[in-house]
Image 1 (cartoon, rainbow, N blue to C red):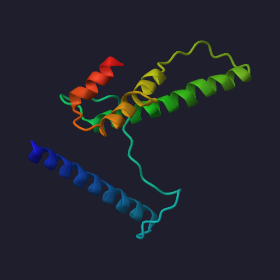
Image 2 (cartoon, rainbow, N blue to C red):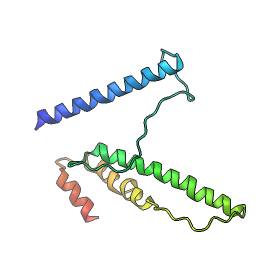
Image 3 (spheres, helix red, strand yellow):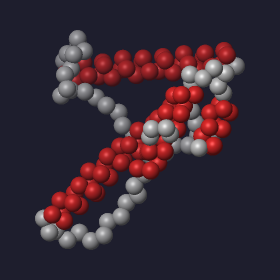
Length: 141
C-alpha cells in the first residue's frame, strides 16, 4: 500500500512538473521570451468547465477541480445574470423572468469557515486521524 501511494504521488509530481514546463515553453514560444518573465499580459491557461466528473473513486484533486469549476460558474452567473439584469432594470429594459441555479450554498458548504475543507485542514493535524474520523465529523455536523 505504501509503495502504491508513493508511486501515485511520484506520478502526480512528474505530471505537474511536466505540465508546468510545457506551459512555460508555450509561453516562451508565443512571446519570444526564453527567460520566462512574461508579465501580466502574456500567459497561456487551460480551463475545462464541462461539468462535474465522477469516477469510480474520486480523489481530493477531483474535488478541487469540481470546486474550481463551480466557483467559475458562480462568477459567470454573478456577472452575466445578476449584474447584467440589474443594469437592464436600471435602464428600464424589459427582460422578463430569468432563472438560474445558484450554487452559492454548495460552495459555502465546501469551503466556508468551519465547513468541509476547513475541517479537513484541522483533521490532518490531529494525531492518528483517519478517513473514518474525518467522515464522522462531517456526518455529525
